[in-house]
Image (cartoon, rainbow, N blue to C red; front, side, top):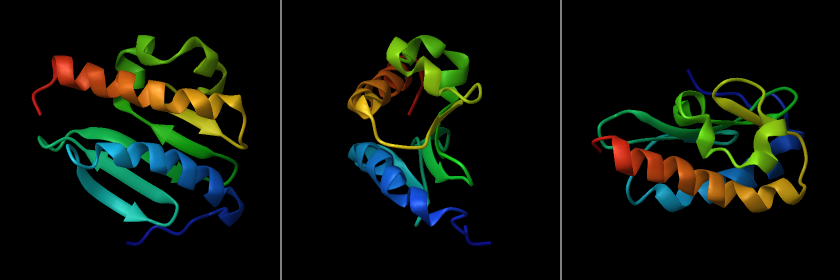
Length: 115
């Protein structure tokens, strides 16, 4: 079944988050790439990162944030809306920290997982 974006007003935020994730496409596999939903997995088929437009926010999902919360920069802690999810509703200075968060997640995978 195809994904249906529940809030097209949030697509600019989703697009910006997804742009940061795309730098890992050379190493990871694209599992899903539809308007409003993007997901990468490791070569060993483990989830790496996903961005998804929800009704009231854009979610950035990673199992690493759940298992190893130390990868999250302190300035982004307020954006956590679940154990493995961060929610964004508008652009602010927090977007400057997204590349750092993604690099932290990637470094964790690179150091502890078999790709």
